[in-house]
Image (cartoon, rainbow, N blue to C red; front, side):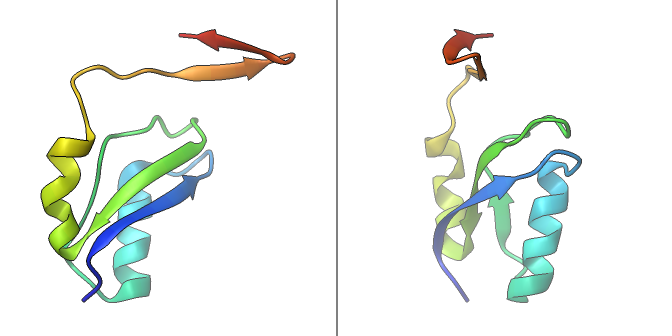
Length: 78
């Protein structure tokens, strides 16, 4: 069993659950969770907790979500 946190680049068209389900199949491991849901159209880094690392999920997330977009070399907070 793998323990820890893996940062996965999530492409558009996949849900956070899709990423976890795919990793379960690749790693043959059941104890996997993500730290927050990304919109299926969103792309970005999705921290995925593995094994004993799943205990960290609550500590890695806070109550507020911040989304940033990069447009024409300007960063805009949404």
